[in-house]
Amino acid sequence: MKLSKLFQKKDFLLKIFSVLILQFCILLGSFYTAEKTNIIPKKLSVMLSLVLLSFGLIICFVFLQNPIYLLICFSLFSIIYGFICSIAYDLKEHKDLLVKSLWTTFAIFVSMFVIGYGLFYLGGSSLISEQVFIYLGIGLFLCILASFFIAIFLRGDTKTQFRRYLSFGIIVLFCFYILFETYFILQRPYQETWADSIRASMDYFLDLINIFSNVYSLSES
Image (cartoon, rainbow, N blue to C red):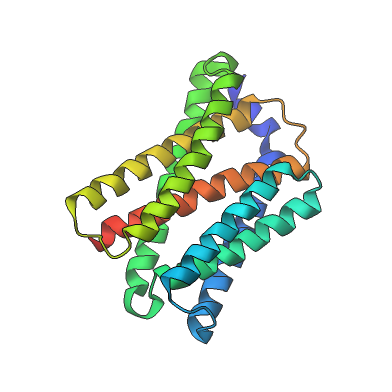
């Protein structure tokens, strides 16, 4: 029974989403604090330094095993990304656009999560192999890397046709990642520890921040 599989995973999913909500609260708090206090200079060099630091944290995150260290690393990443957002977005001038982009991202996530469950329900455990998931993980890291640097070097270039097509393509790409990650959360025999929950939450988190940034870019154009 595929439906019972979802209920069997409910505690694991609850852990994943509790960590995800916590990290978004940290990100928003970091962003709001940086906006109100102006502690982060709105300079390209500062933004690039923060991006490189965030990638260093992602690499550290991959090799950590202890759930406390994973959570600390995740939280530091959320704080730094909040600082990056304070440079990239102007809360005073574009508050409505930011809120709209946030709700759109949430709607996309819910839709892809439901479709991911449907994929599992129809295909069971034989639809996608473990090896494919490894390749998807490598591809995700490369896509995130490319997305960050594209966002930096094309910052302000939101009205060109190329930038719009690029943003749309990135949104579609990360939608597929949400779909496949949901499928594998339901399919794979996780131990369902807090460490597994934090790792799965980080996967979703990276998808969502990339979708948000490109939804915002499309909306702005």
